Length: 114
Ligand SMILES: [Zn+2]
Ligand SMILES: [Zn+2]
Image (cartoon, rainbow, N blue to C red; front, side, top):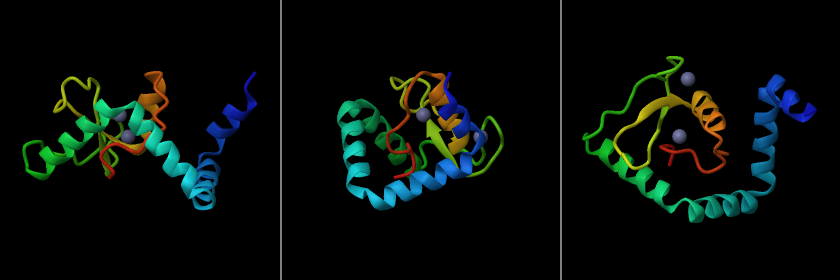
């Protein structure tokens, strides 16, 4: 049984609210977690950076809507980090879902957002 999980599923706004409050109260912890994630995912960070550069230079076209639900405001998701310019454009919600389904925690900084 996992009641906390279902509560989160039923109250996405409250979860977002909690996260926001947590980030406000403990900015250092968030920064620490980000740093830890980056240290453990150097390859991914490099790939994300390369992608952002490519988008800025017009080598890769940024998607305008989520490929799963058609929402706007998308981030680039790499199905395979070895192919840095093979990107699926997803909204934050679908992106989080994809990472959950893929077994990845997805707790790092949002790819394409910084
Ligand atoms: Zn979506
Ligand atoms: Zn992703």
